[in-house]
Amino acid sequence: MSVMTEQTLVAPIADQPEIASGFSRYQSALIALLAFIQFTIILDFMIMSPLGAIIMPALNITAAQFGIAVSAYAFSAGFSGILAAGFADRFDRKKLLLFFYVGFTLGTTLCALAPTFHVLLVGRIVTGLFGGVMGSVVLAIITDLFALNLRGRVMGFVQTAFAASQVLGIPAGLYLSNHWNWHVSFGALVGLSIAGMAAVLLVMKPVNGHLLLKQDTNAFHHLIATVGQPRYTMAFAVTTLLATGGYMLMPFGSAYTVSNLGIDITHLPTIYLVSGLFTIFIGPLVGRASDAFGKFPTFAFGSFVSIVMVLIYTHLDYLGHVALTTAIVVNVLMFLGIFSRMIPSQALISAIPEASQRGSFSAVSASLQQLSGGLGSVLAAAIIAQNADGTLRHFDRLGYIVVATSLLSLLLMYLVQKPIAKRAGKRVV
Image (tube, rainbow, N blue to C red; front, side, top):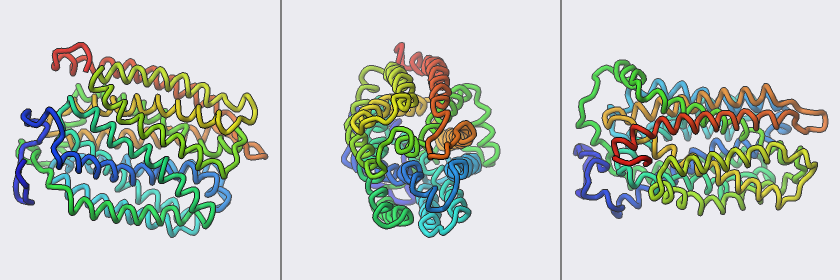
């Protein structure tokens, strides 16, 4: 592959069959870089949940207020995704990624300096405005540069960032917070983000092949053309349902584990560490399985595991206080189900948009994901009640809602994959 300059336009690598059989050295380096970028994005959101048990008493806020802080990121990310969708295919994706990375880092810096709840809330809004779009840019880059038969593997490796945030990020964040304060955790994330921006500048080549394709000159028309595509509607619905269920459990996971299950707060890093170590291996395996056995069958398997484990997890407090080992095993199996849905669903849905609409499609999908996730967090906060001793009530009701969204998303995903499988000449892809 020839070296690209800032001015050179090249066809998307995913559309070049001669390299579709494997990864080049540059592609391998790019996968690692995209995984690191995802690590910083995911950690910024994921760390809010385990820090909830520390932030709430430190800022003297209620569970409902903490839920608002979590959902503020999601709502602002959803808003910015819609705004960015019209422009997402009109710029080099590398430059677009850097622009949003800078804003994301500034928002995280504000969180690191926040002395009050209201300043933290503003910091989460700013971080969401920029960070929420970054994930869609990363997805568009993957779709541009990798053929469909490789995307499961790519998604599997990139999504190990989720596991890495648990193995390295969350335990380290909890350690820093327990030994100093929660501000230090966000400060460390700022340092990682600066390193990520430097790596993008030095390693990533321009991703501008989509600029060769016919584009709408009007950003609003480009957005409407994407949103108005009937065959995109069901994919957007699946994205919405998956996010709604996921965001309902995460914000209150640490509080539930500590207060309801009786796990000492000092053992929270151990749960995230062990769960993350397992998911580091699970991610690539799920990616390979989705490419080898089909993305929809893998998604169906993940849905079944998720439904069973969510029901067990949300009813675990019925047993009273549980052993640390029990909490770890349940978390590991639940993440197995989550990854087995997340990776194949992203790879499968990436095959839907036209090449000229990949950026806008990803931005709209990310926007819907964040908005529905924010709605899920707000709904969860409205359902959850806190007893005088700090334990949470009605956590099991969240489990029933997550199961319902999982079943519906499984049905819709079956309908989504049918035309893709037909184009590929297979029953499933």
